[in-house]
Image (tube, rainbow, N blue to C red; front, top):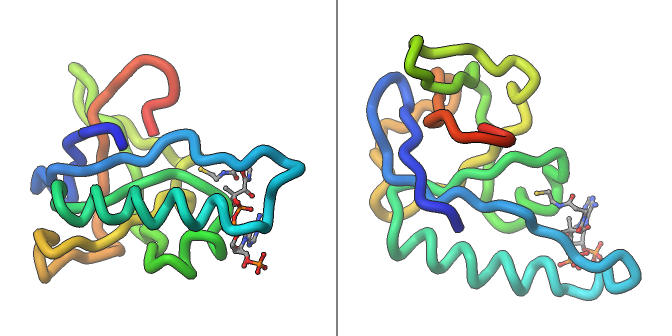
Length: 119
Ligand SMILES: CC(C)(COP(=O)(O)OP(=O)(O)OC[C@H]1O[C@@H](n2cnc3c(N)ncnc32)[C@H](O)[C@@H]1OP(=O)(O)O)[C@@H](O)C(=O)NCCC(=O)NCCS
């Protein structure tokens, strides 16, 4: 769980960003991924305003309460916000007790720049 600042419609949110979830192929579908995510979700709900991750494994995360982000994605750079259209539709979020009640899944969302994959 990587601490990041994501902005939703320009409002910064302390975000727990989940990276590199994988089960060894021969051991898939035995509950290991769900067990790991249950622990991760508890960390995010205790410490962050929002959980976020990038994936195409939507059904796996939807069972666990994650929802797909519907708004446009961008990265914040020193030259301003740059759209990341290839990420649109592949970002999911987990609400926590600290998530603003008015969170709009269709709003623009942005992450801070970093080397490698920005999302
Ligand atoms: C996605 C992944 C982490 C799931 O791990 P896992 O240990 O197999 O997960 P679980 O055994 O806890 O799966 C529980 C349920 O999630 C769902 N599920 C799991 N993998 C799924 C997939 N690839 N597609 C759709 N549903 C899936 C199923 O409903 C499954 O229940 P079932 O086996 O009774 O049908 C694993 O398939 C994986 O490593 N995939 C490759 C990497 C990846 O896509 N990572 C996520 C992107 S960040």
